[in-house]
Length: 175
Image 1 (cartoon, rainbow, N blue to C red):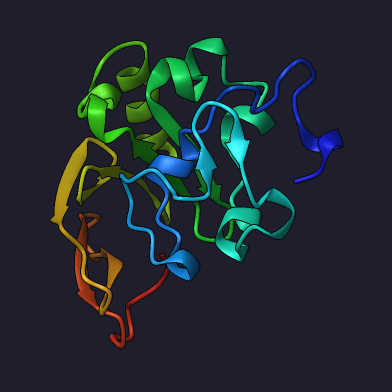
Image 2 (cartoon, one colour):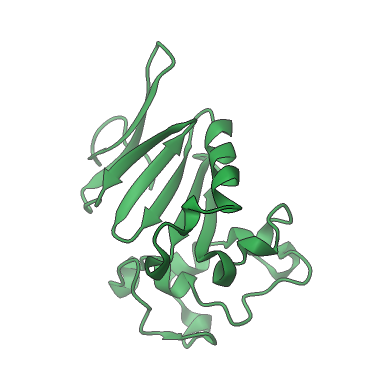
């Protein structure tokens, strides 16, 4: 992400929610815990040398003009990302606001996204568990272990199942 990619008028400003909700393997920082390198509501103390996981994450609120101000992470208590190749919408919920994604105006839009994908899903990280949404279906994936991957299984009859399986499984994909 470059400055020219950011929607005019938007910035991280005083938002550091990504420093709390994202897991950062390089720092052994789990999801839902404020990073030790974060100066809360100010920014990253090591921004210039931040880990690859941080550099590689692009906040959808900053990049998508289709998301209104209600999607600002400090307002929504949600941080959104997108994995284009896999068509996976990522939603990281602030653990102090579990269920924030189930409130309006968010839920209707999230359900719409879940109904629009033909190969991916909406992945919601809430506290320590993960949920996947495809169409009108919600799959509780539970707590994922490091040796697990999320698998979308499309059946010939048109049904879809999303579950946590072994990373070395032929169906295993990202994340």
